[in-house]
Length: 497
Image 1 (tube, rainbow, N blue to C red):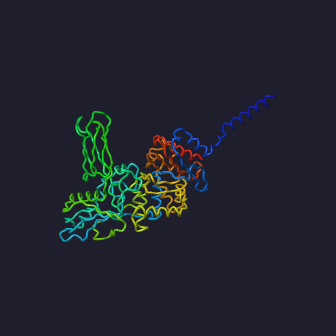
Image 2: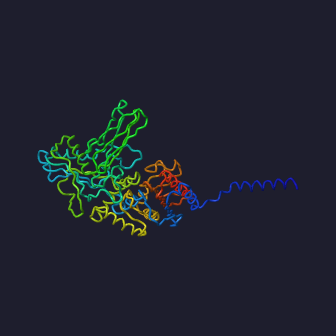
Image 3: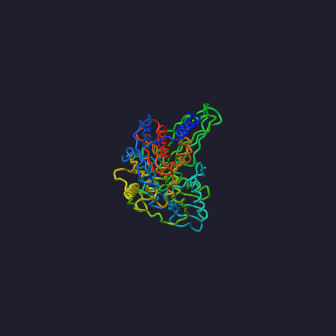
């Protein structure tokens, strides 16, 4: 064999080997990738419901138990915010007014009660609007102080009556079915009211004293509340702080015990109030007196106990007014940070404007009508609330993707997408996905309860396809953090399709 032939054969073999090296590895089908992840030991500890939909083609890429009902946790908020966008419109605003039976007389005296009439405004707080990641909160008193400033400008100098927090716009039924007694103690289970001030919560702060063994320094924000706090927390030389809190549901007495570290920053706990209207009245009364307006009466609450009780929010004379940010900004906070109270308010506001009946039941009736319009299977859902805190709310993954597909066709689809947390960047997904840069194409709503973890939303694959997906795990007994890792890996695997 000639030298030329040897060289030619060697070149051909090298080219063949190089082609083999350059040949891309076979793409693993999406179904096999997900099944591999679900076969991992942590995943075996949960019941899974998954539905993945190619939006342009309408093709199902993967499903498991997709039409069975699952506890969705805060994925429920996708429905309450979508319903609000559809029925109220992105530009809808909430209004809070201060009213009295008669205008102030020539001496600035209001003869009778002064009422702060709630309009369901979730923005009566120090929260930054529009939503900004890691934005500092302003003083929660600022919205009420703005209203008081208007009263001062009207010449009000004295109130010869009570200061009333009036939340009668919505029927007083603060806790949906399926919320627990323990929920009502904490900020995430704050009662639902048409007069929500500071998310119907207050914050206890405990700082170390100057020496070991001394009682910790207690502070409340806001500082004036109808609560008693029994502080038995001492300052310890230990680096760690260990503080325990006792409070019976519905009680206005809090007992604190344990210790805070001498060199620590202390401890903060955010708790729910039991009567938001009374809470707002206390804050308003204090703000009035601090501005030099004399108040002869007390802080009181006005509730409407049944839908049959008449209530006219425009009754009397309007003395001050505050208007909220548009609904889009309210809904963005609901989904980005998973705000339960605000989601419940949206449900009741829809009921008020569509049924003239501001109740949870009427809101759920309108939700059923909405789901019928988008042709969700009748037995694929059961709602008890608008936030997903209820353990009795159940939704099928395929119904979640049906909602997502519908909202992706609406004129405000881009606005809707912008309401969702961005993976690894903001909201409840800021610390998820282990800082994977490619995860930013995932825009999705989280959901977490003790034995339920969920993630539903949109993503764009490497090939440019837009997918809607819903991943729900129920009945797990291992830590939710372990289940969330599986959920995140499933979502990341979808990007590769």
